[in-house]
Image (cartoon, rainbow, N blue to C red; front, side, top):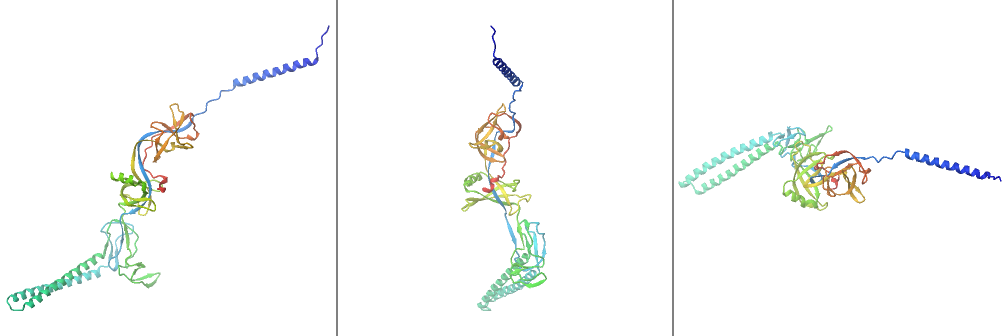
Length: 417
């Protein structure tokens, strides 16, 4: 008997075999590609800059805005009336104490002195004659040759002549003083300002003159001099060495300042507006009352001003060093980061991996921040590149900066103090 197979069965076996071959080929290709694919490399280390947390002394300072003030400012005014014969200085120059500045025409004062001295000599001679007459009268009275009344009258004449001589001596002294006032000198050493008068101007308490303006002559009143009120300054002299800087601090720092000042004069530094040190001086005055409208107390420091870099009226930044924090942990200010849970830093361990740790920052001074809690000193912290870090990541330290040394320096928040 002959058996027959259906054509459909043969066809199905062929399709199934083809699919099995395709599947096996696909599996083999996938295994080959997987084995040939290289192993993925680890993430590269993040480049950072680091610094060492250091224990050191940090000055505690108060920042303020200050004003430079002259210790002594003198307005030179003529004390006698006359015309200016000489101006013996250059405006803007440094003048010495006792240096002659102006010469008012001395001839009228010399003539008045000569007249007073002549009158004195005349009255001294009259007094001498009266004293001789008194001696003769007293002798005659003793001899009973004249009445006692005549001798007594002569004694009164002598006393009157003595008073006249004393009056003449006072007139001579006044004339000498006026002649001295004609030579106007500087009472202090300082810098002269702009001239307010010219040669030939009539000056003094009773000065009056005819002033000329734009070719027109007009008479001024007896209280003016070349358009200036009589008695107005001829020039001003401002002392520059030494010089004051005045500034105010919050009243809640007063006790601390007084306590520190009692142990020795506190140091004050003054800086330009771009925070460059000008000079250091000493605190010399704590005002005796608090300004109730601002809640501040005025302080004053004295500076030698050797280089004349401080100028009256100038605004400067001031730093008052109140005390020093000893042996505190410090890190560069850029190491401190602030997040939702507070301030933190990244520590670098011996395997160059970082760990985030919370800290409590304190005073910031001269690019250095005091760490009150969180570090003990000696740790290596990241100062640049923190924004790409997370705990456990590897870092490549590009540079380790030297420990920063804090110096008194004005901060940006000085304006608020």
